[in-house]
Image (cartoon, rainbow, N blue to C red):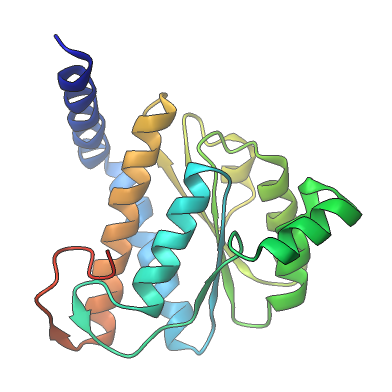
Length: 201
C-alpha cells in the first residue's frame, strides 16, 4: 500500500472511530451548545493553539466572523495566534508560555468563552491560558486527543479525539469544528449560499 493510500485509509478509520464513539459525538454537541450560548448572549470566543492547532484556531474564527454555509451576521471570534507583534512582545518579555494567557487577560470579559486546542492536552501555553480564563470566569471548551491530558480536566467541555496519532487527532478536530459551525448556522439562521461546506475557504 502506498503512503498516500495508507494515510487516506488511516484518516477515514480515525473519523469513523470518532463518529462511532458516543462520548466524542456528545462532547461535540455540548461544545456546540456552549458556543451558541456564548454568542447568543453577546459574548465572544477567544481561540488558540500551537502549530496545526493554531491553524485550526484561525479556521474556526474565520468561519464565525465570515460564514460557514449560510449567509448570516458576522459573529465575534478572535484567534489569538495571528498578531505577530503581540506574540513576539509577550514571548520576549514574559516567555512563550504566556503568549495566550496575556491575551486572554487583556481581551476576555464576562460572558466570553475560550476554545483551547492541543492534540496532547499538555501544551504549557495553552494550559496557562486556560488557567487565566478560569480565574476570570470564562467558559473553557477544549479540543484535544489521546487521554485528554491536563487540558481535558481543566475544561468545562472537552472534545477528546479517540485516536493517538497527532495527524488523525487534527483531522477529528476539523470535523468537530465543522460540526460546531453547522450548529451555529442553524442557530443564527440565514440563507444557504453557494459556497461549499467551508464557505470562507
